[in-house]
Length: 575
Image (cartoon, rainbow, N blue to C red; front, side):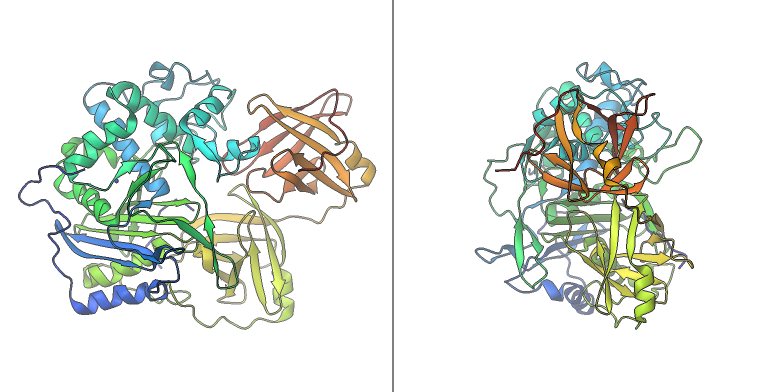
């Protein structure tokens, strides 16, 4: 497949000009297109399941807007196109827009060091600029992963002050600034603080006055108060695996990287700003689409809170989001003036896949490239899997360290395979050939090497987004494991872990996380079963004694823990 898709594996009322759109200016799309969109969301079109809110804007007119499923399962409140969603990382383009507006007015330079505007940010060994934070090339460690390692749960109340306190303790970076692209939510929290410092008001107020109100986004705000009542909001859910759902709790009170509350119709108004450019003007909107360039000259697909890509021969501008059970996606097709929004409140909602199906129906023959057969049917139904022998299924099983910074397991359950990702429900792996599987819940393909030593992760369109290498089965001697036992402290997190040996297994214990099993993969190197702990590499001093360990995960590298001279009791039972 020649076309590619790039996204990161990967928004109150003002006076509108004559040709600007408002939710009431709907021009219905043809009935056959509406039926195709309805079919894409048929599995959600019930009052007893979470669902989706969808909006399509074309040439400045809202041509389709509709809701499917329930915004609140407890009360079976239906989703509409004006239901308020937490849109997670779709928020980032608005944070980048705020900073880009201020830069255009001369309040800051994009190549300013962050400490020029936020003097409380520590020196991190190398200068970090505003532009690098916008493009995720700063090397600043990710806030969610740091919070997880420190003992926080993502359903805790997490405020901006909590994140700032964590940032103040940081002593280093993941890499030399602008040498790599690595997504950092912390960078966008800092960008919101820059906008607040220079904008003369709180960040939510600045965004409302400079972006939302001028565009008529009446039901949009940055949500930095977890106790605030929001009329018409959706709550999020996750499937339990038995056909039921459980609530996914979200209590964030920090804004910049996330926490935009908005609707599908409001986001359609924002997407149309790429056409009429009424907020920001042509210079700012062009700047928003400028992709980052690394020190080695490589251009990355990420611009100002936006992923720049292509689908079926048309350029795309957009972003996705994932927090708790919310899964969201927005895409603007500039060559045909079409914007599409899909907001879902269930963790397996697959909004980007559904969004492209909506695009197939809406744009139709406007795509230069033909619609090719999907690997596994539509976003809502799966083709019958290829039958594979037990021998082939067994060869695929094992543990794999991925380039995404996590270790995953492939397990056989009868005549099917399951992918186990830390802290997520298992995902079915449907075989589509002798060595390629479709990971349904993640909408990715895993293509195994001929010798089954690892796999490549691909989008449905064939774009490589990562890989995994098979880990050996290592069973270290228990006397070796005893050498790792002790208490370890991170000065950058003010966090303690007690490491002990239990029944021949190495266990890292945290007062909030409880016991975390560490599995050996190499001498002095272990992987954990939790998403935030990643790889734990024990360090030895010149005499060969273990004196600490370093944690490396998807978005945190080489976070140092030191071994304390005196340890906690051999075991502390939670509760």
